[in-house]
Image 1: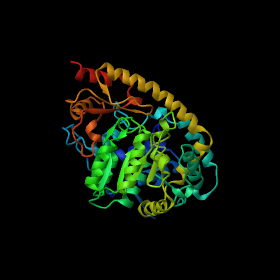
Image 2: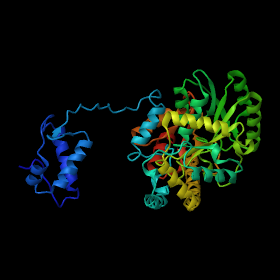
Image 3: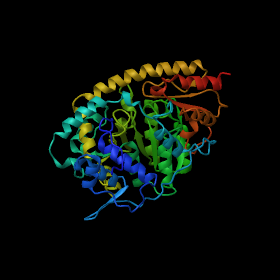
Length: 467
């Protein structure tokens, strides 16, 4: 007799109906662990369907861990452990709003929350058409790249193309100086693994990239924040901190800085390089937002030519966070050493993603896509700044491009408290203390202008501040 009810006219396929039905019976303990399932032939006969349909449904249940196949005996209900169910996270004071909290809640609830605190562009803004076209083209090509490991440094034609891309912004770099990574976070992780030992002092932007702070702390580094002005790091403070802490490396995001939106000036860049040379400090330049800038602006690596500067970037923000294609550019000897660390910690990166990115760059999709993004961001940035200033917020600086603006209401505002209240209403803000090296209190907020088109965000801010 049938054990599940099937409807050939339902929108779900018969395979899905079988898998869902059996799964529910096992979850409800209507079928106990160890029970032998009907044979494929009997199940097909009882339900009036093909054996092929039953095979696919059973295989899916095996893959999900609900059934196990015993050769020559049939299919049996697996012994399943009761899953651990975490308690619903409550929105507590600042102690709970740490780096992992922001990451987890932002990524898990991005489809159900308003996300002015997000660090990515909306999916509808990304280059989906070009990706689909390139995927189709790539799928027709022969070769072992679909199933084999990639090469240690990454797909050579893409590294050569990136060399040309860097040359266009004044950075001379051969393919041997470029190592492909799974995004900028992976790139900086490899650099940290190579240079940093427990107890080492490391300079970082203050405010800056909070995921980097968490990663550095996991290596036992002592992170020291260098204050940021509207034209880059405060070089006077930088020198004093170098004298006091003797760091070997400084991680900095120079163009359209996260979270302030500021960009480094040429004068500050020269001063940073002089200090790095004087005190023997390596500068890691994170340029992940640089392609959003409408002009060819000063970069540390342009002035230094990869002597003391390690340059990292990625296409995660501009093309696809899912593809995870980034890179490190540095002097040849260091590139070889970073490549060794890459092999030891994760073998190779995805050649499929790298080939796909190569196609997007060579076929002109990327350039046209960037033009559209810059124009769209300009409109959103102007609109968001106008709305926030209308509510009484003060802008740190007006960025030349990119997705972030950095604002505060007044120096007494507790941004963490405001963010907690917003979260209860399904609005994910990015409070300023998250971007401080040690989560020091901050009155500032980072807004992603691409996610500020929901009226509920401004209504919440008006209700809280304008009263």
